[in-house]
Image (cartoon, rainbow, N blue to C red; front, top):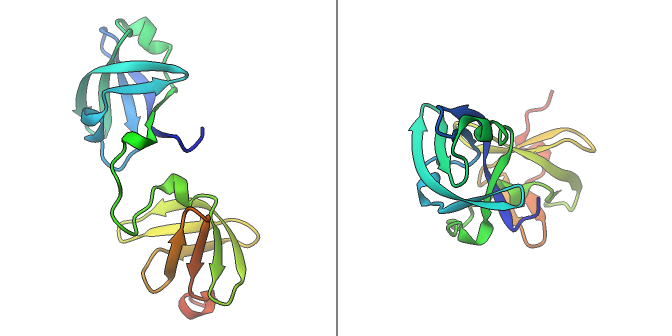
Length: 166
C-alpha cells in the first residue's frame, strides 16, 4: 500500500447476525472511526453506517454487508482511508508510516541503517533498526535531533553518548 492511504483497521471477526464487523483499530485513537465517512476495503469504497465500541475493538456497520455470511467474507481484510483526510500533525510529530524506511545517521555522519519499525512504549517511542546491526533508539529530544520525512533522514546523537555499554 502506498503512502496515499493509511490502514486504520483490520476486520478480525463478524459481530451479530446483521452483518456488523469487529475491527482491530490500527490508529492511536479508535474514536477516529466516528470521523470517517467511508473506508477502502480491497479496491471498494464502503460507507460507514454505524460505529460502536467494545473493549479494545470497534464494531462497524458497513454499506453492503447485511448478514453474517457476507461479513464472514471480509475477515482479515484491512480498512484504509485517504491520507489527505487525516488531520495535520503537531510540529515534530510524525506518522509511523513516514518514519519506517528513513535512514538514521549520527552527527558524525555514520549511516546506522534504516528504521524497520517504531515501537510504542509508555514513555516514548523507540525507532528499531534491524540491519546492519540491531539498534533501538529512544525517541527523546537529546537523542533524536532531527527528522526529515521528505528526505527520509533522521539525525541522532552518537550512539556511545546515550547507549549503555555492555
